Length: 492
Image 1: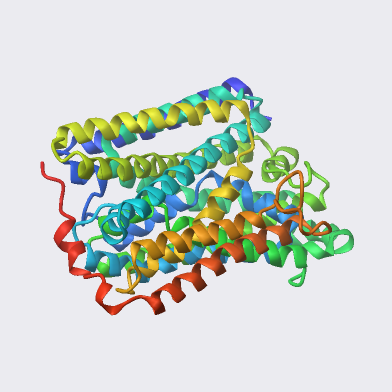
Image 2: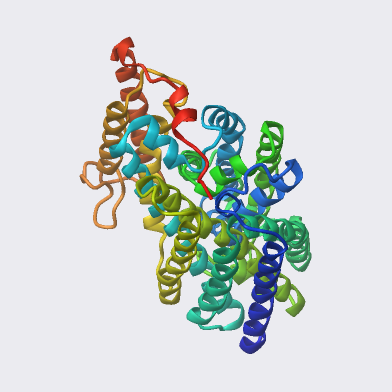
């Protein structure tokens, strides 16, 4: 283990360094409300790739893949990687479409408001805020638990230091600060990930020796036909694709890209990078099982492994890596939520000037981190909340984005399709008291419950959405030109 005082000191120094760098970068020039919210047209393909990878690969990459590997195995990790890449690939197509239809936009909620009306708009805004806040809390909770295992650090100390310093520079500089720090973190994250993986494998005497116990005692974890792993992998593909289409941080980066070429390259390359990263980190969870290290299904399986087999320098490397990963995702989540809310605020209250909106966004950023720190300090598991948010996203993803392509799909149809999918998903969603909320099926495992719930939620919304589109009158078609006419830049 690392000495707790040393770990706290490293945490404070690294977090303060990135906070100072972010603030100093923004102070070099003027900061408009547009710069703060979307940094419009400021990133080429290289920077777009860097900020996307740093944003999407948070501390969860050291936690969730390894945990999935301990019980669902290699096939689930492949599904995990595909699932994480899927939304990035989807943005290659959906992003340019949104930019063409709404060139002066800022957020997904803006599109939903003008395309579907107030009911779907409020539903989508609530969904985005809930999903991203759960993500925010999960990141802080995960890093706090990991530091507790590696260094015996109190949960609240880790959460407080990282949370406040990240919120500080994010509140001050908005997306411009986030993109800059993401780019610096990206340069360091990938090498550190590789070093951590190679060091762990080296101290396990190589991949062959590390996996030998698995082949003998838990061969199903390496099998590509392991049913729970396949089902969980399918669930992850649906859940991650659906949820990340509502990730405001990604929509900000759609508009921060210099042009469509930069956007497509940035998202496509990011998708290609995340797949091997997830699989490699997940394999360490499988190796931990082979060594009998840690707990089954442990969210800190990788950290158990590193603590038990590696020397201090590897522990410090993993600690530094975890710090940068969590800060790179936290600033994106904080600024993303604030951006979505403030963009809507500018529409609801057009009398608020740019300075007032900037103050509001900074205030929201600071306010958001406080309950997240409180949750992280308690060590609560937010997995169940995460799954609920993902399932709601699965029910809403088709209705929201079908409207980008179909003129005949109305706001009422979008609401009806989303609610129908949500009801169907809830009926089959697993609970601790009964396999399904309805208790219809008794003898069934967790992975099957999830894939059925997510499949039903998505399937019903798609079928109903297409049916309502076919039944719609041609005279009620939406004029896409309204999006570019009604959505404007926020005046200074």
